[in-house]
Length: 423
Ligand SMILES: [Fe+2]
Image 1 (cartoon, rainbow, N blue to C red):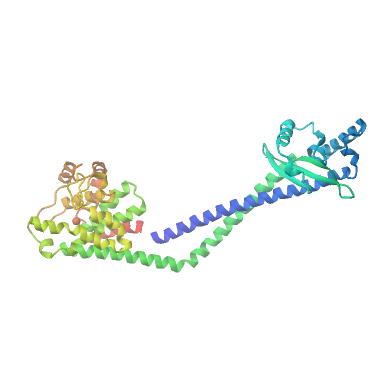
Image 2 (cartoon, rainbow, N blue to C red):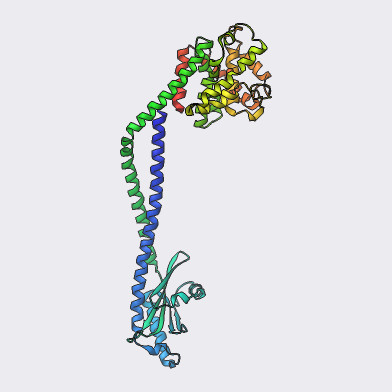
């Protein structure tokens, strides 16, 4: 179930990401296309507006009479009033400015004039019409330069107009952008929704294969855990209980799903290395000699050898390698201390000892819940991480009630539910 849900989640996330990226890219494209159309409009306007000035070279002589100058200024003013140009300048062929006329009834006209005058004009004085688009306070402005030629194709001046998009144009741009954006976003979203079931249908076999593989891996995990349980006891209940305890503590600690999977694998396989310990040590009813105990300790190393060989089991190594370490460094095999012991191994140590104390063993009767808690508390900071112990004690009553005296079948069902949640 978790495998399928995971594939669904990933597909939805990727479709959403694709939707977002496409929406942004297409919206930006729509925006620039609209700007281009404004540019074309202004270009046409500038050509049309500069036409009356063509062939009238007297506008471009430095020694025009006062009357001629007034006439020119009046003509330029008309351009301004009629054509949304807010500033019109004329230059002679030597790039010397001869006339400049600005609109009078536009807010911030001085600021706008200053802005354009402060810019370098060199690149605009060319043989071709050229323009620059700028945004000032959220409004579009276009500076257009039209070179003027006589019949003999001699350049005698330049027409410069600064076009200001009026309120209607700005509103049109806004509406078109919002409208296009909504259409693009909706179209891409609908496409993603249509694609989702198609992609899922195409991946059906793959999903089934992934699920079968996951089931096979979990089956192998259970088989390996059972194999070692069969060697030193008749039931799987110890493995089931310690895994349930560890998972419950992991959930309270809000571990991520990946770490929960490592915790489950590690808990189930913690003593897998005991497969390599000889029967006369593993099954010895009495106390082990020092030498035998040294042999017994090697189950940790054997366990690491086994789980490290298989990628799917490799993340169980934290618990397999460090489940006999103690918080104060008196454990084995590494004798590491405190938080140097991986978190999963510190969690598991609590689950393992809690189960050992509350269970019947060949050499002891089960301790009561109260006695068990007393013993655990006595080992705070010695065997156990004190912070984890406190959290564990908080939920131990519930754990004990849920698992104490339960048959293998009941424990197996509880554990399977937990496994399905994370795999
Ligand atoms: Fe062990």
